[in-house]
Image (cartoon, rainbow, N blue to C red; front, side, top):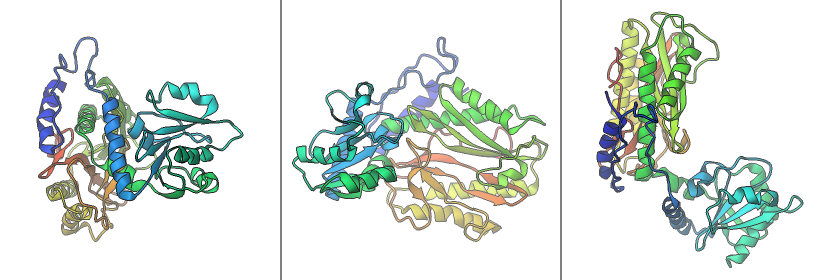
Length: 420
């Protein structure tokens, strides 16, 4: 049986190949049945520390210099978590972080929330507060004035809400507001070794949870029954998440159907899902057949597997994102399920990290070139209306000379145990 210790040892040996530095392989004293934390594979896993967030701020400043920005405004959401570790619920009251190109960050906070915010904001960082009748947007101008950057260029994180953008246009006097996506996306697209370690483990947990749940497939079970089995197995390994199963004809809809169905012999079973480890996501899809597959099911499944392998073989630094999509789509078209999006109805893949779907994307038209440390899903599919669909999805990291599947355990056969 694979244990967390043996898995982390394998993952740790692979990290230096990324050119991202190596992490020590920890002795986590036992496997999934270790006393005191039954099955918790996340026990002993490192957390992000102040040095990690400072490195991210420095990375942001390099991108800001390239974009000629004096500051970057980040509101609540994944970008705020990335740059500060602060998770803050969204409301009608703006709360956020202004990152300076030449100075330390400053926060904008509702005055009555200051004490709560101080529990989360890193020590030593300045906070400006606004009362209920005052403008939070004017505070941003004041921060620029303090920095000696009056009238400067402020990058806006792409997940800022529209009312915040309009408020800044009205009330942040003199600032030039520009798109901050080149900074946020540039920073987050290339992962550190520690981030990759979190995602490696998250993907492994999801795959093992699927394998355990598939072993319990039985005639008459519901999609909710299977989802509960995946969630339970995931939780026992120390992560939060699960899977979203579809049976039979519903698998022909890429994101499934709301209609309930009981499992019957010959049904295609598709499960798409994931979990989080230290906030970093996995995303895995497996498609199997309950009972003996038909020749048509086997043909489609094998075509999707071949397309996934072709896409993976195309991955290496310098390759445009679109070329990876093309490699998979070519195989599916040659198998008779083209052209274009006819049966392979979506892009090949998406970036993944703190969010399940994030920049960049493996899709036609995207000329962005792959870099070591980028992480994506590789999820080709064939969907035949009113019959069934097949999708196989694994996440991977771009390495110095190719790629590596996160969490291992790739699909190898339509017959049990489905993957290693």
